[in-house]
Length: 333
Image 1 (cartoon, one colour):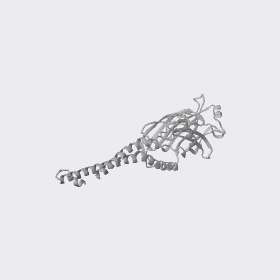
Image 2 (cartoon, rainbow, N blue to C red; image 1 turned 180 degrees about the horizontal axis):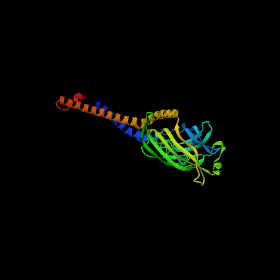
Image 3 (spheres, rainbow, N blue to C red; image 1 turned 120 degrees about the horizontal axis):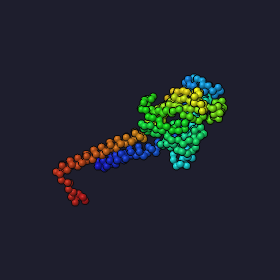
Image 4 (cartoon, helix red, strand yellow; image 1 turned 135 degrees about the vertical axis):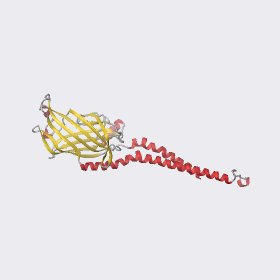
């Protein structure tokens, strides 16, 4: 009876040991994905920011600039792109809306980002664009892949509409979470004007005045290494209007400020990420290591039962003088 129990335990030990790597290396890459219908709003602010007054073409200081970034998953479009490409994709329609202290619009830039739901790699389909202009992304945007590595990534910049390295700068503690800190610096670059400007001014009007838009930024992210989600983001952002063909003429500051996530949005983001990371850890750490440990315990129990059974058999033989038990024909009958 003990031998049968030891064989059953051995079978379960082998099953647990085999299931552990399957969960981590086979099930996790297929089960972990960004939901197609996600909806998020993040509010960022820059205090004592500099803005251009398009009525006078002079800079002015405002007590606060607010940037509302809305992200909405387009489920219907994701299904269409998925059927077209044969991949599990997510389509995010985003809007970055900047407003002055009086609530008046400063800039408004819509964007469509199409990416693989599992790897977060960009998928070049479904009408990806920035402010209505088609783009072909190279690298990530908004979110890092699951299980972030300590290395540089390529990050898409919506202003220049190009990708550049974003550098891993070390591990830090942020609101109780161990996070990876990344930085990206975009040097002064000529960029397109937004299609919608204050006071009903069009980009053509600005160009007719002999002005062009230049931009630079230092971008900072605090990333949860398990889910790949940013728990905080900041930018030291500068824009200026330069005179076309007149490099010696003084440029006009168009925007300058240190943009930070509003504290209440930081708190809600940290709480959301902290809950989601447990689901990822369940498949990448808790279950695989737990099954491996359980398999080891079951193997030890199986070996213990087998050893105990053999000792019992040896003891019985020693008690009978080391001779096997004889069975007479009468006893068989």
